[in-house]
Length: 299
Image 1 (cartoon, rainbow, N blue to C red):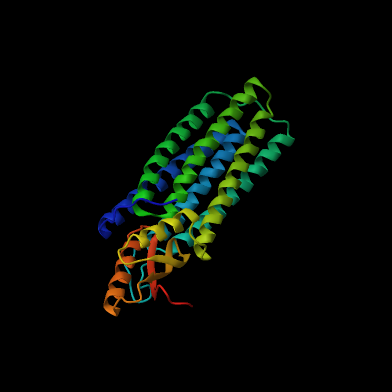
Image 2 (cartoon, rainbow, N blue to C red):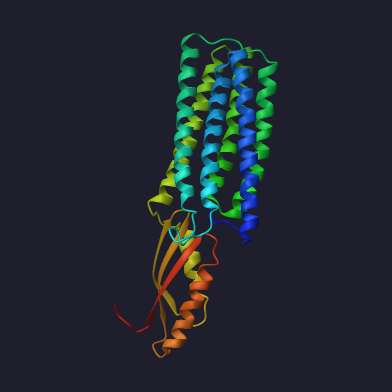
């Protein structure tokens, strides 16, 4: 997926990061406390699973604060390209907290299922789950918008988690309804569904962030876009080689372009500079390296 980002001053970027941190940490803490109390009072396995997920959200919110604080630090001698590469590391820690929440939710649902389940009152649990879904929907919209503006993989993962929380709260709500109108076992079954969804999201988040850390390549559509952008530069006859890999959350590009063999060194250098400038306008690209070859040259 290609991010669309305005290049904002560092101070404005930091302000957006702080806004995202406050919304995420404050919202998750409020929901974790509320769901935890309701789960203890109602005895609902589905709400317990949802509360475990919210507690996991609080943990990753704290990790996110640390990761984004590191990412906001300006370049220095130890990290001349900046500190944004710390984000995928935090993303993996978030993934582990999500996986633990999935385990806790599944374990509790199993115990409730083995005990035969129970009918859950429709009063307080219903209100909490509906409120939770509404809050998470709002958090998803805001965090996703900030993630796009900053091209932040950590905030992108957070936005996805908020959306999944809307679905898990909805599943828990269905479990509470089912325990009243279908069978008491509907509640722990819904707890299992919530746990499976948490595991799924943890797997997807882990896969994405591990790819950032291990140098995965760009998507085929992105590679085609890079080639097309390079070949639009006057003087570039074609791109005959391109290699892409993620260094942290952003891409490194290595291109070989062909130009007319009669071009002077100065002309070829100017073409190369224009290609580099164009490619680095893509918000997902960190750096681009361009090798110029005469069109009739054979490697």
